Amino acid sequence: MESEQRLRIRKNIIEAIAETMDLYGATHSSGQLYGIMFFENRPMTLDEMKTQMNMSKSNMSYAVRSLMESQMVKKLDEKQERKELYSAEGDFFLAFQNFFTHKLQREVDVMTEAINLALPELSELILEENYPDEERKLALQDLHKLRHAKKYYEWLQQFVDFMQGSEFFKQKF
Image 1: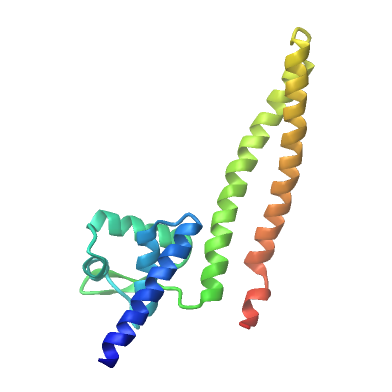
Image 2: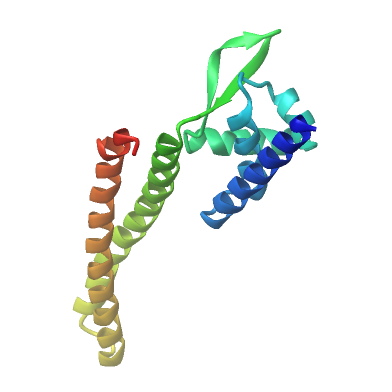
């Protein structure tokens, strides 16, 4: 009876982890997998994860790869019967830090690249002699908006750098 209650509580927490990760752009199944792995007291193979999650091996591989990219799961150097072993980051502070810095860094990289490509093109359009005045005015508005956005992404990069190297998360409230 006691075990059933503990398992029910664990299942509720795993579902809550999946819901919150879904809020931040991870798939629901990736969140469930992280929750399952979080409660495991040992590393797991893909086959063990597949059995617990009742998912196809390809979907399981995708979920594991996604969690590894966010550094919430790591592949271990040792193997179990020639199968790869994986373990979840058990420190919620570090998991948070890894997950969010990964997501924010991706946003910074994608947007900075797009803005850096767009700014010179807009500048050229604005300076072009035969460019219609109304279009020049709109291009100038876009240029100002993108310069403002660039400042934001420079600030966001500083924030990501701070989060990655911060002692703040090491305090463990």
